[in-house]
Length: 518
Image 1 (cartoon, one colour):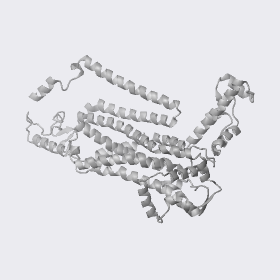
Image 2 (cartoon, helix red, strand yellow):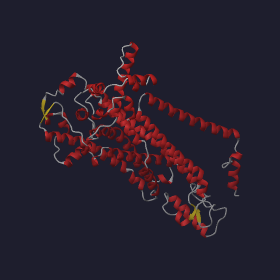
Image 3 (cartoon, rainbow, N blue to C red):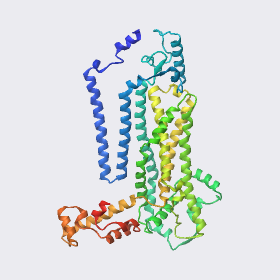
Image 4 (cartoon, rainbow, N blue to C red):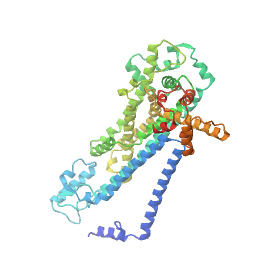
């Protein structure tokens, strides 16, 4: 044992539980148990609050996030349990020299190989680089080295922890920043109920299409498709979602899917739809895990794969923003081509053909993958800085590191303040609306009906309309679905008060107990 090893042993740098005081062990256990229980209770309280506020989509997102965290935790646990056995796997040193991420590591291995060939394995065989593990070869025979060291597996488990934290924080940041940007839409929605708005959009009023605010914003000097793409590219940076765009797309959505009734709250519908899509954003698909593995494989010194990869999220976010602006512009062009004179407000036509592959959700898949790439980029930087320091060999080129950080932050800002609001609004222009409309309307209708029945019971004015339903109500207490079923005409009337009766309503059974089975 060398003098340095004896010093390390006496200082207790590596001690098993046999050499650890019980008070230290108990303190650490208490701390981690307390933190774990606190986080678990916090998540449960959040779930209860979401249930109470009937935030079904956000509740499902939370459950999906818990599944992702469970997978990440299991991966980290497996690394810790198997690190000793994995580190015993040996490979020839010549293979260990291939595809190394750092120049210093290459020099360290070359030094060690030269010393091994000269048979100078003595106490002075020290590595000039402090980052190199001097025990890296002790478990393998001459000419071989460990497949991956225990320290390397521990550092990899730290990366999984950082990736999990960054995944949560990044997605929450994108959602909350995007919702903050869309907060002003609430005032626009309230304006649609004013007399001034109704007068300005009087259906008996005729106007030239080119004289409308919507047409003037999106037409103008643009004639060719290339000019329109260029205009849309720059427009996303300046007032990407204008008030006239919101009001026009709202009017087109209501006309296509509901009725001319202006009482529908389009802003709340967009918010619920965004919560529904958030379930997809918080997940990590197998393709994304494969991408992580590929990028770790290609992180070779001199290749600069991460530098080139950092431009991909920025390019994709800009292309998505341009495409969404292009969809709105093309709808304006379509209105002009079909009608030179319009009646009332311009009516855009929602259709899946506006989107790539006639699939609005394809944009969500691309956006999801792009946000994960940017999350990985930021998580990798945080992990490297935490484990190896800001002056590590990973950061030997400061200009590249600063460029990558600036690009990552830029993508975060663009995706939050530009792409997400555009996506939330424009993707409602598909051929079909999302089920959240029907779910909430049905819930409101049945809740109102139940309130009326309950009030009638209290005043003694309820009449028996169906003996079978009354018998079922007696046997099942306060079950609102079996006490007295509403007629389809009553439900349809309530729907007409909010908008046109959806086609699916014609298939709703008369009894609520049958509706529950559906």
